[in-house]
Image (cartoon, helix red, strand yellow):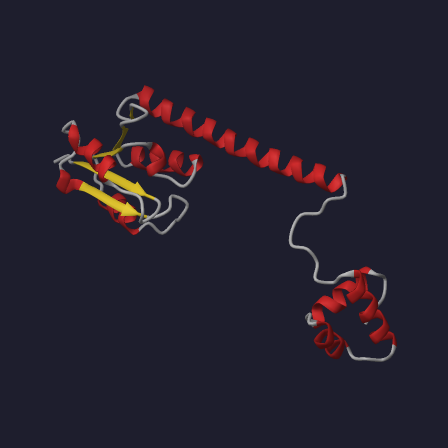
Length: 191
């Protein structure tokens, strides 16, 4: 016999699941005993409650969420999950997006939303890479500042030229031997 289950998720323990559970049970969508609730980041792959729920779904069952983003890590993940559920004969329903995959139009809408979300993520990535390239072109390099100041470099060069071993120079300057070696090669010198 077909059964309807709900899934509610919040990302942090300080957030509250009550609003999602109320939405799932309020309109008679899901019995409160059939709501699976979880406090875990959507980016985590190891969401045990969702994994258990998905494993227990059978052909004819329906999974109801308040929003698609409660279900998946990314647009591509949601699209894959919808496809897998569809192949198993399980319907997905999202209350906020008013999507129901029991119809062809509902399945199309999920894939369109997933494609748009993926395009948005790709565009954000492209903008980030463009910004980094522009900063590099202006001479700005991201990341943590080097511990090897010009004074430390000069001291390292002088110590190494005087025959000091790399580990001793590194200890004296408070850096690792690998840092000394890396910076000496950058300057065209070897240790």
